[in-house]
Image (tube, rainbow, N blue to C red; front, side, top):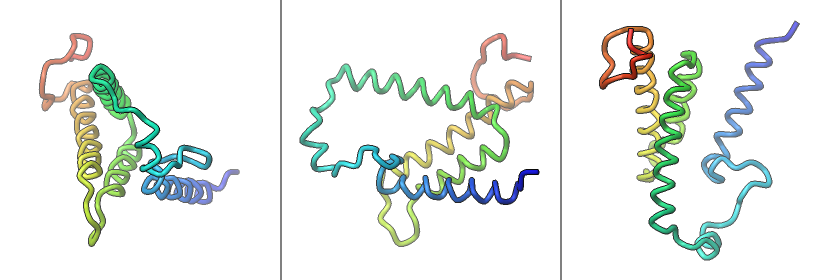
Length: 137
């Protein structure tokens, strides 16, 4: 028989370890990119307008993909997303970084959008916008 308490504490420990890397490595693990920002600025040419547009398209697609995936997530998984958003939010006494603040807010927005999608799929009212016919009750 597997000890669920030990397994849960191990998962918690691993998650906290991953979160701690987020602050200083952008989530990269051992052996990941760990170049100083000054070195990366010299090595990487600026993005062209076409590359920026492609990046925007990909981000929009990923956000919609994530929203649809977390719409079917358990409450525990949604709580993990909320915890991560709270974790990257500025701590009391620290200087808030504008992009981090926006990222945390965007994560919460994705959870809320997933809630609207859940409501739509289950036939409940409260969905804002039109939905494809296959999703309508």
